Length: 59
Image (cartoon, rainbow, N blue to C red; front, top):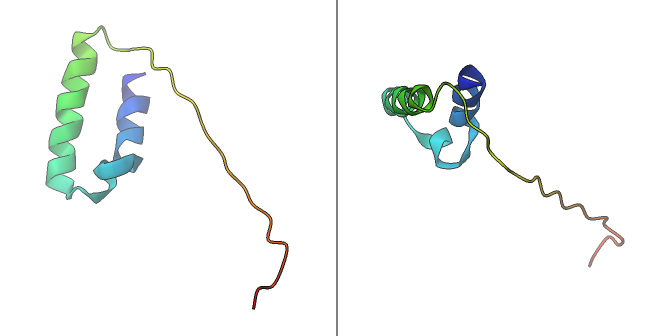
């Protein structure tokens, strides 16, 4: 659980824009927090998908 959560963090939201040294600090802090909770946690989430079909070529 811990490794999976830390692997995904750099791909989420504002984390994608952090320089490597700042990301390392965030991951270290998150890893420490996960360890303090016993090495894992439950997280509820939902995926929302939107699609569209173009029906005309426009003007």
